[in-house]
Length: 324
Image 1: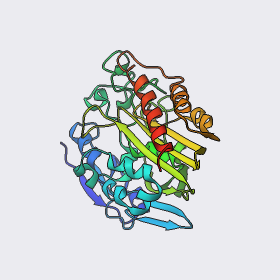
Image 2: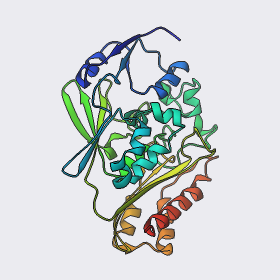
Image 3: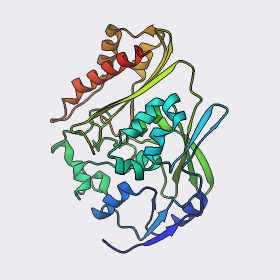
Image 4: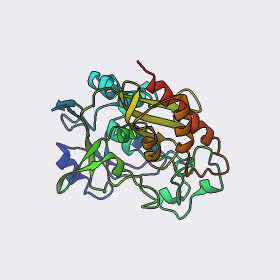
């Protein structure tokens, strides 16, 4: 491992200025970055530490809306009473990440912005994500790769909190050299066809500093369900973040976002439209699950994700709709 300098940022603007140095990288909790440095995927000359910035690890409420600092740890976020009660899907997503040690160090912004865990990328292959000209998973080991939105890269986005934030219609506050801009969560993530080397729209000199959640509507229910290939320290094979606004037994509106199946959090607007204005019966849930897989294009070794995703959507919908 090469030597590098460590600098502490005074505030978000100072962090952005320090990131303007040659080969500088931002670090919050550092759980993802440490692995990437060890694997020689990044070899920074300067680490710009964000943990020194005050008040970016807090949750605040104003006029019903909630702002979450990007440096809040996943463990703290999962236990925050206001998040647990009003934005359950996000609390459940945060508590599902990795291990207790990772949740105690990892931050919300870091989880949203983490790089892919594709074994080709992580093991030094010259793939699209590493600046190369091909995706080795297409004809290789693709058991955990994308069934939606793939091409030219077929990675899946590894974040658990990202599908929950898209389902909650969150907005991301991003600081850059010109000040601050706000990006809807659904527009923050980028498909490989936009830029095969990137997963989001952040520029080199930008950092995700906070997340804004809209006021929770009355009678809203939400949950996050994650299927793993082992019990701990792994990412979703398939996951679903579902938010339902209910009027007794009738679904007034729905937002459904899948994880583990696409290079970005994969929203299902057609399924959402199917549910609006109707009671969610077993029959409707089954129809919605079928519609959820429209456009799926599995690779040679990940077709099992198709029936698995159907089951996750159907069961999670029914469980949430019938929840007291």
